[in-house]
Length: 173
Image (cartoon, rainbow, N blue to C red):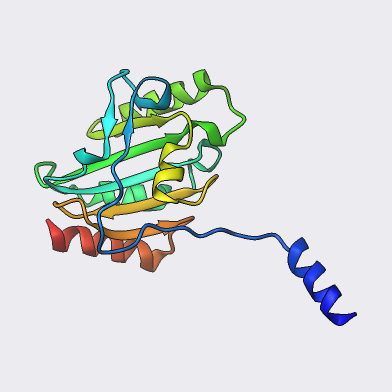
């Protein structure tokens, strides 16, 4: 009887899936264009662009868009050399109840606030599927100049994780 209760309890508990990209490896190639998404201006985007400089990528469920603002602001405050540092914000458009036009307006406002960041829309959770990221979340990933993953965290970053992210960024530039 105790085993049955234990099994039922485990089944009913909410589960959190943490699916961060493996550190020390490149992420699988992803291309977003057409119905799958792409840049705000309609051009395609490829993860192959995450080379040549250190890149930080925020992959965000629009419902969780503010979850890592502290990390975003801390990175912006560093005023990293844009010749050596790039940033990408990708909206997981299929992870929200919000209509696409509302998300597009919000992304355009973000583009104005962070003009050096590349903003991309993922219309069908392509990156969730190919990179095995946690869905309905806010993921932060740091890539070195060769496109190797240096840092990958699903969910809200702690202060120490933000410090580590900034330190790794500085170190690899």
